Length: 382
Image (cartoon, rainbow, N blue to C red; front, top):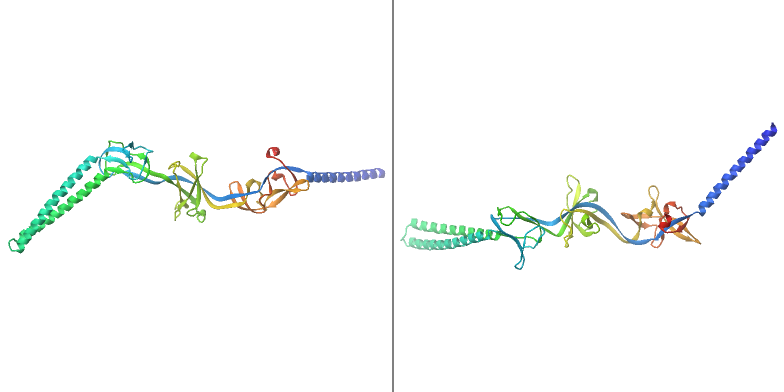
């Protein structure tokens, strides 16, 4: 019985020794394999560039100036045509370009011309009457002073002269009104712009106050946007901006902040911002939805790298991997970095990385500091 126990004891002891040796050997082998493991990575040289800190906003495109042209006189629209510098004319329609002072419409021109002639004739008649009354007044006054006329006749002569003068003033006022009506019967454009709406057709009767056309100055347009209150200290007049619209998805229009409203919107608590930009090609039209990027900060000639190559940051410091030469192999080295401006998928690196270093841009998630790497293309990693 004792012999059997001794045999079992030694068998168990041998088994424990064997198992301990086996696990130690396997662990050592795994460590050796891990040390000798080479990870394929893709790299690129660290370079410098420009990066911007931005605020993304949305708004609407508006014309710089919109004028609703209405009639100041009553009558029939004789002509609704744009007269050029020459003798040619173009019918007023939406989309027609006009210049300041260019004739757009004529309303009963002959009627108002005749009224002007009547007013001029009335003034001439009243001038003759006033001159005659003035002469009669002087004659009666002289007779009165010589004792040959009564005081009553003198007063009547003076009154008649004053009434004639007042009547002349009234007819002169009517003449000015006739001149104004004649001038207003010829409708001209008050601004350079484009006809965006026609409200009446040629030949129709029109009343004072009725709209004729709407003209918009679109050589310069405005983008009106609203920014959250927290951006108040960052936005200022003259700040550069970029505008994109759906109609020209691949194009960016350069602009600048023209004005920042001094008070916040009472309902939304947002800052109203007006951005102006040249629109010589007339590509931007009122009513377009605008995506506006305000550039609050810009740095040139700084180290800029892709955002997705930066690891860590949630708990510890941010870091990247850089490939360095080590004898006959390439080694991945962890570099802790400081991040500056963030723009979309790019980061500015203010410390920890220099231009010219070899940055790992693919495969970095499988690396540890000091691990051997093999530089390959992205197709090889996949």
